Image (cartoon, rainbow, N blue to C red):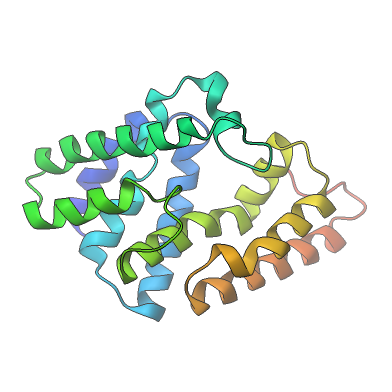
Length: 199
């Protein structure tokens, strides 16, 4: 990865030590790189956006986190707060590393709306949105979410399967999500006697 992305990642780290966002960001970045290979898009926009998209949660009180996202969310105004605050923090970080000003503007537009905005602004935005949501299908994301949403394995699988078509913009992301669901099912069968994987 380019040295500048490593600098951005290092500056983002202090803002990602809540809500499992450090792990979420790493896994989402991995999915983003896979989607760039399959779909195209600009890594100079997508990777800074995915590395910085959730830094704003640091400015949302922790007692509101679970009310701002997930199947039982009832305080979505905090979701908007994390987007707006995240764009401000991202601006500071990107200026600190002397990132290209025009690219900063596109990155900030993507961050400020990555959860609440239903339509995508561009291919770059589609990939960021898809990489962000693919986390939910990963082994780590799946087990973290069913624990915090107090779901059974089957409830979690049903939620993800039923949302797949409406959540994702790219065919590549849908394909990756289906692969991940197949792997979760295989893990469940393989770990039936040991009570499932532990995270």
